[in-house]
Image (cartoon, rainbow, N blue to C red):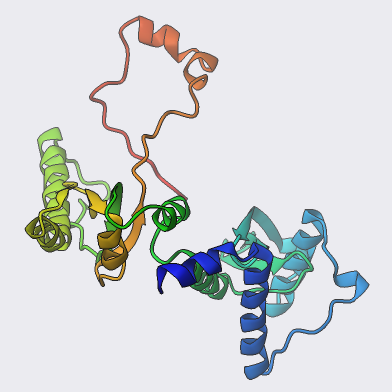
Length: 279
């Protein structure tokens, strides 16, 4: 997309682009025989509690279960800003079999497909910003072609096969754990080098100031805007960002849980290996 056309698209109100996304979604539903119908008064925005009951009823009917044996264990709102919509996603467990079911409802209680919404959201995002982060996209449009911008180029990465883990219950020594962790790091570095190496060489061959991260498929560079508009179209590029300096957002947490008292006694946790487990 040309700079002029992108500037025109970015100037469009978000509601208009969201409307276009809705038209696309509606056309697809018509083609599949599931055209959306007008909402009746009872289908207007429902409360979280009402949506939860709708989710339980749908899952109970679909899987021939009773509502009494089902329990909502988590729910979250998924927002799609480019489409101007959001859905409530539920995770429901059968308390007899412990089987887990998922369901997504829009605010009127109609079932939605999150994967399809995400695909439409990405299409709308790419139409507006291309492969640039929104703040960088705006800066690119307003910056002369020969002016340098500092960027972080995130590259597409194929799946990487991790080393086999030790069998559960097997006793391992600290040396064996350290060896496994080093193997994981080495394999990760090799995978990143295979992705970033050729792109880095390509940039440096053109005289650009660029460097690559060792463990993430990202290249940091200072590039003229004209080159950025070209590099954005490279097949290897996933997204281009402005580099950001991250800072702790929970600076009061340490004092709140009195960790500062423990740290003052010389106990900092430095060098201790921890694991995060998501269930």
